[in-house]
Image 1 (cartoon, one colour):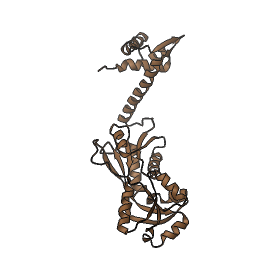
Image 2 (image 1 turned 90 degrees about the horizontal axis):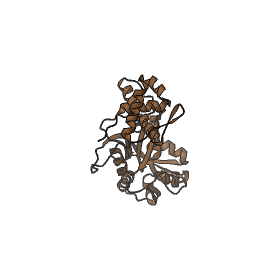
Image 3 (image 1 turned 180 degrees about the horizontal axis):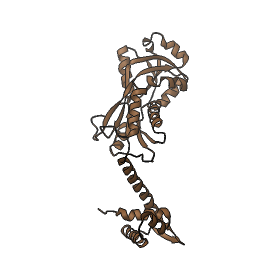
Image 4 (image 1 turned 120 degrees about the vertical axis):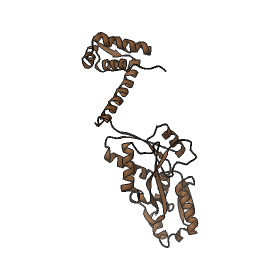
Length: 299
């Protein structure tokens, strides 16, 4: 393995920032020949020319600009480390990389993530949406800080991850006003033969609903099945049928889609999880999300 001399990199970084060896000498309190020699050794190690002289100033070559960007990251992280050890803030915005399983209601995910912005206003949020297995693979290599899912990670996966319960919610049936008034009476018997829009069979909510329909001895008329919950709600907004969504999002659904509550089913419990690569939650934004979920959002 080839090792980089970080003292050489530091001298290069200082000269690149200031544009002259003289100012770098003042910052580092070193003689000019010393710095020039060390940068020469760095160029020799890398096999690349890093500076070109223009008058009294030094300008970076194309490779020099690439090395400078890496040096910026390296020394910035080093400063963060020292600030952490000494109990000072880093000055850099917190970054949160989140995977959202595609069947998780996006309104719920947004509410969970909004709680982190309240505590960390300058946070940079990066969200990815995919199937659970793909997101867990990315989590395992630390490409994500957490995955928000409607099921725990299955025991069959070959990566080490940990499930943290965010809480649970009942399920509410919604519909346009005329449909809501009609099927609200004698619920849930009224669902027998009723037009209904459902999530696809690969979702946990659908499996819960199928079991509940069987228990209630009702067979609704399935008008459509949707993997994307936004499309399901859009069809419900047009009055094509009743549709079930987590009760926790009841207010937002009624306002945004101009529908009414048909009935709440508290015995239908939809659970949500934060899945991380660490047993103990450490990322401050993940801790904030977890606490808000239990305190404000989910039961």
